[in-house]
Length: 362
Ligand SMILES: Nc1ncnc2c1ncn2[C@@H]1O[C@H](COP(=O)(O)OP(=O)(O)O)[C@@H](O)[C@H]1O
Ligand SMILES: [Mg+2]
View 1 (cartoon, protein in one colour):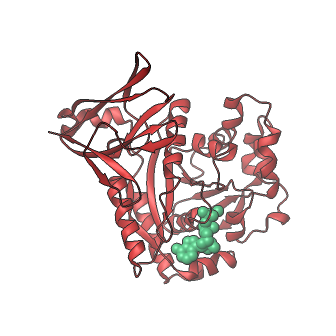
View 2: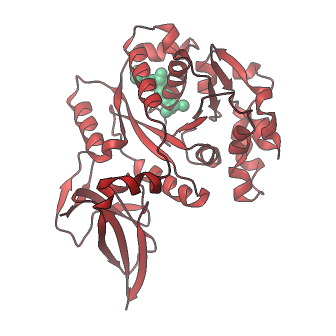
View 3: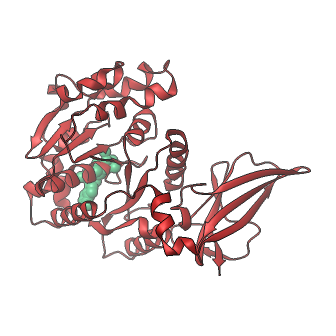
């Protein structure tokens, strides 16, 4: 069972559209799919034709009570052939309050416990639609998932806030001790505008292999389908929106999550050629300094060894990277702020805003 969370703290970047239509496309390819609607606004529930106000029990009941997860199956509704839904409701917005007094661990693992309680073989895919913030519900989704899809819209300034999201994922990876495979999906693409083409190029240049090849084009039928409570695959099967989500499903099917990195890396000749590269950041005021670049999927400090030393007033962060020969772009994340390396004159302006420092490993 592959559990995939669709995450971005920004609203309107097509999380729900991606969740519902990817789920329907996977289901029409014959996979059994469960959509978990974790957004109190219940847009995915509505987009699958179910009125949240007419649902007896929703995810709140499952997540609010200790051990409630074992009842997940009882709230699941059928939303189509091979396609089920764990519905949301506005009451889900009270969950954070309800669980406030519990240990962090206990309250963030509610959904993963629920998903684990599903009998083996019930679903091939579980797709989790997240709310537009990184609160308790999104943490629950990330804990339950082993894969993350971040939709980025190419119609507006897409990259804003992705740095924060990657930081959250990095933090969480540390805390839950499981790796998350993060992939970027470009959405709301209108190839007629120069802005969209530039944004797409910038996203690809920044995130490289993390990007799906599939790009979801702007297609008004997607909005109409959601309004009618139907996935695009059945509402308008020949529309661009249906074609694009079918292509996305094929890509998802073709790329099972990466196995333990150590195992795959050891066998890879590229990694054998990797060597340790050291960079340093000096600052008197900073408390937390991480490094993110195309070498670690822009997830701050992922796969990086850090040493902190004091040099009089100044603190020195030493970052030890393992890199194969090549050219890399990176930035420091200094107390949550993304900055270029002040000691490295080599930098390029990033098509998605700001400047990235450049490191060449020969
Ligand atoms: N590719 C697209 N073409 C046209 N409209 C889209 C597309 N993707 C999403 N939309 C519309 O944009 C709005 C926001 O999308 P939604 O999936 O609800 O975003 P989120 O869940 O991230 O808030 C919705 O009205 C949706 O129907
Ligand atoms: Mg949504």
